[in-house]
Amino acid sequence: MKKKIVPVIVALLLIVVVVIVGFGGMIWEKYSYGREPADLDEYFGVTEGELAIILQDEMIEEKAALRDGMVYFDLDTIHKYLNEGFYADMGEQRLIYATATDIINTQFGTGEYSDREGGHALEYVSCYAEGEKLYVAAEFVKKFTNYSCDLYDRHVQLYTQWGERQTMEAAKDTQVRVLGGIKSPILRELKKGETVELLEEMETWSKIKTSDSIIGYVENKRMTNPAKEAEIPVTDYVAEEYTSKSLEGKVSLGFHAIGGEGGNATLGEMAAEGKGINVIAPTWFSLTDNEGNFRSFASPQYVAEAHGYGLQVWGVWDNFNYKNETGAEVSSYEVLSSTTKRQQLVRNIVDTSAGLGLEGVNIDFEGLTEECGPHYVQFLRELSVLCRSSGLILSVDNYVPFHFNNYYRLDIQGVVADYVIIMGYDEHWHGSGDPGSVASIEYVSNGLDRTIEQVPSHKVVNALPFYTILWKTEGTEVTDQYITLNNVQDYLQRMNIQPEWDETTCQNYAEWESGAAKFQIWVEDIESINVKLNVMNVKNLGGVAVWRLGYGTPEVWELVASYLNR
Image (cartoon, rainbow, N blue to C red; front, side, top):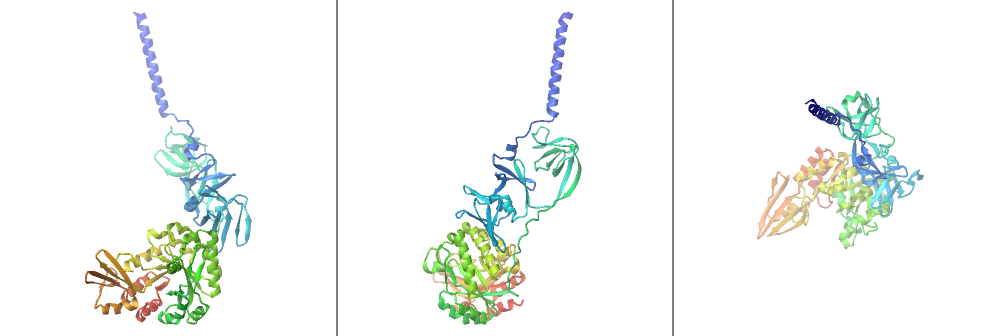
């Protein structure tokens, strides 16, 4: 009997041992610390020649490139995170950076650049093209940007902002893991006494960044000595100041529409009408081809006569009048996207203005596509440099800003230009087939508010419409015609129409029927103009402009003159 029981007991004991060992193994497996190292290539998401980018305390999706031991960023990344002032001409293989007083050029694949002082050698290639991307050396970007860039094995650490950071020390040797959890793969060993930056503290684990910018998690119980540390900002680059020329008081500008050299003879008449104006802007210049050439109706005698009336002369350059007059093909994109053509145009504008004795340049480039936007902005940057050095005032005409035309970049214009003129009209425009006000007060006021968010108010000039539109709707057909401010009252009297004040648009409104046609008109007159001037005064604008001379009445010009003294 005993012989039979012993084997059973032994078997039971073995089962117990196996159970205990198995259970212990499970306990060990559950509570022991994992030792699996993280795949750092996978963690940083890089392949050979790539570097992850840690910006401040986050890894961004963009990557840097490592070439000949130097860090390079693609231009989109530079624009997004570091400095949007760099401009690339992929056709001419040139990288350009415009400051307040200089235009810096470097050729793709070269180790040199030029500025107003001449050529300068670099110890590295400034930039290189790879497919449709341009990569720029981090060190070259640093010449014009305050940021820090530290290179590590698979990543770079960038700082563009500085403040105060929270730190703590390792109380004992431990590990930095990919995620919070003792089984998470190990990113890095952390030695006792090593200081890390605390990014986020949780109940048992904290998100940290090591001194070599590896972001991971550590156990709270293994850390000690929390503290705060001031970060030292990078201030190596000191940007040149964008100085501005301005009139002593408010601008009062009258656009003088000139369609030929004979139009210059009307200056005396226009100056007499434009009571209170201190600037006259003749529409003399218009692009004539895709090479950047322009036609000119300019007259030195006109300039001398205008000066005799106490007026400054700001010549207007546009991109549409010659095309409208002749039907010639003129592509603003073709001109502005070529550095050679664009810079020649800039030089010719400034030389022509200086030769005529003009005080200012007015740019009126309309109908630009979003594709053309970056090239137009570069044109304004480069033009501002030469205007500033030549003592010319630079003013730029713009549509009322909306999200769909933000590529005109009022924020940049507000820095590089002396005056940003908002064409506060064409809410409903000729040929639109959509009857409505040319410039309701809400349209004007909201447009100015959006402008002032981006441009200092003392640089903003609002242009008033001295015209309105008469709308005719017959069935589904909508036609329209312009009526100038100095003719609208006569027209309404002839038609025996008495408009009534509309509080919504702050304009006198009338509608009537004749036969099968319905007529509508939102009148610009002394009352509507007065409301606009009052709103402009409250917003502390830099002045007023009028489209155009020849359209006003003495009473309305009295209002404009009084606005200057408000």
